[in-house]
Image (cartoon, rainbow, N blue to C red; front, top):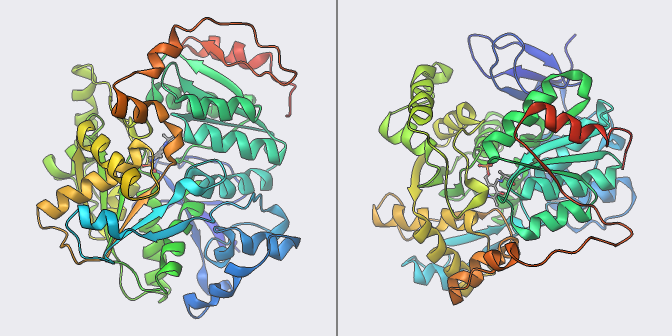
Length: 474
Ligand code: F0G
């Protein structure tokens, strides 16, 4: 008999299933993305969402306390893929907050009480990624992984490095050369991950890490959001918003779109809650691209690509990518976290847009920077990518797609201190990064110094750089 939790290909004409004990990032049969699915009838489920409420106050010690304290695992009945609670790797992630932002609402011409900001930058490593990492590390522990890796523009690497260190696994991060903010690089180094600076951008790094992952001899466990367990953890952002709103869904959820993991997870969260009868209403979704990395917007709004119950036309995507290759397209935006041209979760994002009656928009770098400054001036601040959501909200208000009195939650995905260079440049015109790049260097001499390793975008060079590191577990 199949386990109550299993993996399943999202392509309806395939639907192949796999055990949760297997490590996959694509269907063996058709190459489609995988979902974690549950046979809910065989699992203990709460009758209403208020069941979760009492856990919020639990102290973070002891097994139950540790799980209740986590903003992800206090909803564990809604992501029950683990075998036992001992499998769960948690560092107290997800204790983030939903803030009513009336000062910002006023600036945006919205009614007081209608704009809410979900500050995911308050996670331990400074971004929403910790919600996903706790789930993927739990799975990594279940399957006995020793070495975990990701491609990253910053936040994923910081989160992976932090969890890897605490779970005593070897962390390897692939970052594009010159493409990472200093704050995030410092975290990856500080937490002790092997940090490979590849000559290329995020898309190149992801392609390489997947290539190395596919060759099982390398023993890597892949932690990017193409890993379906990551998205199980990211569903909890929606649960926390519901919790903060006394279980009443908002009218809109607005989120920046990069690799499209978040929006995919949000769509899955609400599709499941609806199926289980735990919510009556599903909010609408808005996914906001940067204009310099607008693949989803082009496909949805110009090429009219829709989910079609999973029977969407993949040739539309292939043609778009071929045209991008031909034109030498390179994603480019100040919002480095969403500087992604080929989002791996694209089909799942189409499904989420369908499930949540969603829309997609793109915003310019100038709009991103102005709205980032507004969040800082009239809120707690966020990194540029997160502000794409606010800039997108402005657009949707102008278009009257969103009305000023609707209840809107914008997900602020990362902390303001990720990218202080962008902030200082905005306010002073001084590019601190350029100054850093020409600063004199000295050899590191700290006892725990952990230097990044520059590598060509070439498989052999990367494997060679990893080889010297093979014996390390921490
Ligand atoms: N916002 C922030 C702050 C991010 O760090 C990322 C992704 C996104 C949004 C995009 O989210 O993929 O769910 O659409 N950052 C990755 C990284 C690329 O490497 O840290 P998505």
